[in-house]
Length: 283
Image (cartoon, rainbow, N blue to C red; front, top):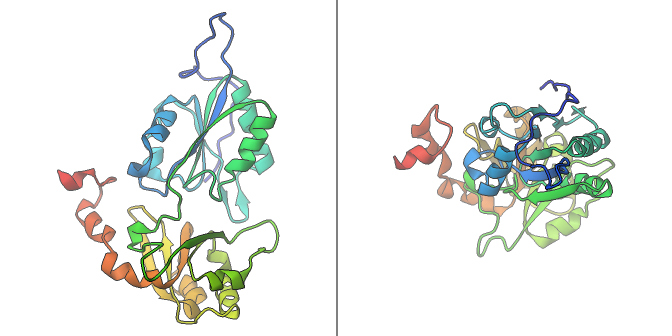
């Protein structure tokens, strides 16, 4: 997605009135978690922040349905990142947030999932705090939500915990693979498609069974969600053979075997072809 250059002009302030002495109000930034994709999974507080924004800076994983909720007339700009294709460097984005808030604007920084779960929300907040900018954080449902795929991350007698892991990093991944296998938790890898072969090999080398169930969840919690299931020994092969595209989660664990019995989303969404939400189900 191409990025429109941000104008330095200041749009009409909607949310920050003048002080009693008629001096300009001080701007602020709200870090908003947009959830995993379904617009109806936005929190009420997140929607209110979007509606009150003077400007919105949004990530790649903010779904089309959520972008449709942006108020008409509110400037909204894409500042997302894909592998090896960042629309803006993180340091420049931090400076941009500071600059726009310094103009007296209410800036909504909208991120897929939760801002503090592999979303660089902490980095941006540190930069804003250092610059003296007021920051509010609104959490969102993390992109690691797997219930739309019929996969419970924990289940009595099967998995007593889950571990979220990012498969991306500025350096080689510093992961204790043997510890991951030893804890016998459900493993959820974010941003792992390009490293599926490495994940497969590292888990096998650490002693995980080659037959451990795995699932690839593409476009989770969206109308176009796709779930591909298999075993650990064929993880990398599945990514290629099924042409899995980002965004996608890799789920590893025995709970994946429950997906067939617990799947519900495909059946619920089937009558809603062409519709963007689930509210019509009860109509």
